[in-house]
Length: 84
Image (cartoon, rainbow, N blue to C red; front, side, top):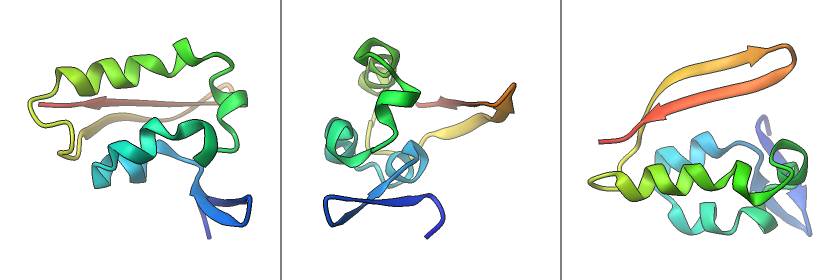
């Protein structure tokens, strides 16, 4: 169950990557209920909102993005992606 956590008796992704790859925009919009670590990774919604801005600029927001940067730096996760 790597990358998964249980919350309220259901599975939820702890990473946005699989959700982005599937193009599951409904799951992204339901981030407060599906991502138990959300308050720690993005203390306020404006830290997460740029994701939606980038997807809104995409030709097809359901198409899987290309992940250009991934990794960790000083204990913090980083991920950049490119949409077309």
